[in-house]
Amino acid sequence: MEQVSANRSHGGTQGVYTHPSREAGTPMTVSVFVPGHAPGAKLPVLWYLSGLTCTHANVTEKGEYRAACAEHGVIFVAPDTSPRGDGVPDDAAYDFGQGAGFYVDATEQPWAANFRMRSYVETELPALIAAEFPMADMDRQGITGHSMGGHGALTIALRNPDRFRSVSAFSPIVNPMDCPWGEKALGGYLGDDRTAWRAYDACALIEDGARLPDLLVDQGTADDFLEDQLRTHRLAEACDAAGIPATIRMQEGYDHSYYFISTFMADHVAWHAERLG
Image (cartoon, helix red, strand yellow):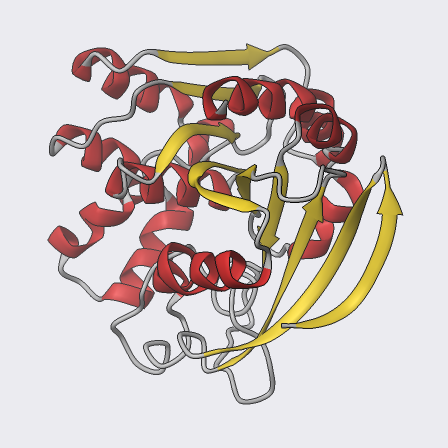
């Protein structure tokens, strides 16, 4: 990994790094905050997946997580949302192509060669973090995310129940098989076979038997995307039917922005820290 920047913050170090990615076939950028710690200490890791049009920078600059991570001794890792670069295919729409990887491994052309965000987040990047940050305790991992990244956090955790001790989300897309954003992305990246989509839909995964120990979700009631795209009530219904303990908080008057996320970020970090030990 090549360090792009490093800044002292809350007694720790906020770094930004690039590295060549075998899954994306292009360099990728990742933000990592490491709190101050004693020599030889091992710290739990909290992954944060960002939403449509975002990069690692949105949460790094506006997420307000560092004070809470420093207080609880949690490493915070925020990757990009898709591969990028002149040789990477793109689309003119904001909700497809670069900046809109949807955390899937694409099978359709021309996306299949680069858009492998599932394997990147599930396999390649964790191995790299473990190798480059010896203080990271990869036996204690949690995951969270916002919007498209909330979808990513939920589905990755549901597919990897032995890896993640804690899962939360901000304004997640919970049922992409049945919302405009999701249908466009899953159809474009995976093709017309909707059975292949189920591995990338939190409600479908729960219906198919996947489980979480518990769950925290914050959703703003003034979110413009709530009714048509996010449909939070479907996740609540799926968790209730499956017996998954889920704390789903509808936050009055909050929208889809980082003003909302930053308000409740410390709550999420503390919630993960409690479960990560």
